[in-house]
Length: 293
Image (cartoon, helix red, strand yellow):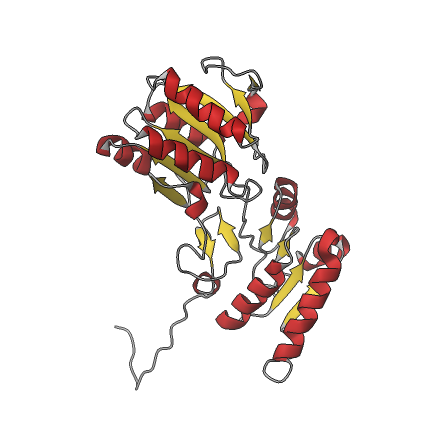
């Protein structure tokens, strides 16, 4: 498990490995190395009389990672969780299967039929509650027929929370807003920044998501059942939200408990990855002279 920042990953992932019958080697970011060491030592003290030595290990350098991801036959799976550069490096260089917990470039599409008050609350929650996490919204797609009054009200509410708006040419501007670039549509900000685009309809929203999405979390806000069904069927993401914040894509919110992260690949887990997703199935067959005809 290779991760950046958050020392809680040491505890969460150690517990998940123990619960699912796995050994685990952890490599955290250098900025929290001392915290990681303390937490890893606590884990090992707790399991000292219960599990084999080295069931939970912590390594500290990039050279360790380079060597570990070559250990075919000794390590079953590599799980990188962090920034885009980390994921791409591990995926390109590992000789072991990689289960990527890639970036969360999440979108919310506000359909023409959406309840305006509800949409405003959901967008604010998805962007502002914790902007630095992978299930925060980064791009807002708005149906072109939605009233300018509502869009301006939504923009004012976002700016009141300190959010920087990066807008397509069709959006009504504000004094502080700036023009969105092509790079913005492909950027996971992890900050109080949001890019906004007016689109023709739900099909255009899905096409934008197909081009720029990261298969993490996508949401539609709508009262139109046909539009919601179309969105569900045409968006590929580990979680598709109907009239709900992207922030709900989380192991705890799904009652799965702690998670290693949110898998954006499909071997073999897709979405929040807990103890269940860290196990495989094997078959024990008992016979008494049986043979296959």
